[in-house]
Length: 253
View 1 (cartoon, rainbow, N blue to C red):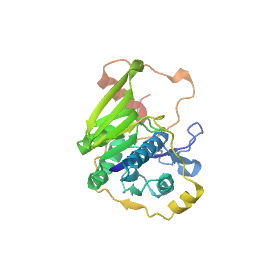
View 2 (tube, rainbow, N blue to C red):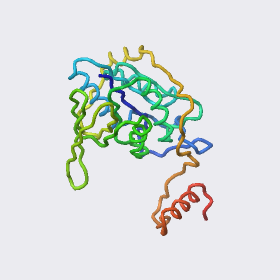
View 3 (cartoon, rainbow, N blue to C red):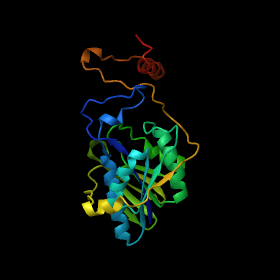
View 4 (cartoon, rainbow, N blue to C red):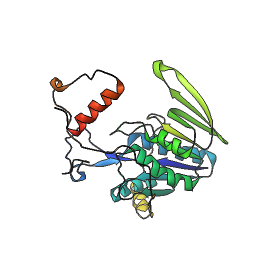
């Protein structure tokens, strides 16, 4: 069994004040510390357990990011991932869920993974978009927010908690994409020795070529500090969307 696990590097302290680059298109990494997205750690742990239960297989940790993400991939190897892959090219942005999914899709398609696991959402953007977008681009079925995952041969049984505490159980043929909820398991942590060995593991860096881009960051700014600036936007969805675009661009008074 070959399992691809998509991991993302996120800002560790999201309560701290963030400093932006002069372009205000991203945060300035000089003043922030980073860690592996929490839900992705659960996805990686689940992949390791599935391969261990099967008695054979490979777990590939894949991320989209610049060279700073190598440290995160080394920690994934220390946990037990067999092979790390970093995908990057000029023009990519980790803030573009569609662009990230498109870059991941090219690599995962070549790997021909039996199962693709992602965290249900990132702790910074919380869009819950990358997993479903990746499944759509790969033409694979997708099940989200797995609270329990069982793989038997070519079938995965996924249990998810829905509104009102109801449990939904879905069976899906592999290959498939499954997004994993936190609490699914208890992620292991690699020892100091394992981390030192992981630093010697070569990290494959892949250029995905032309990718499909989605959202483009126009400007980053601090959230309003007071409730007095809150505004309820009336009207139809299209007019509300135009108003939000004007507010983000700073064109609205």
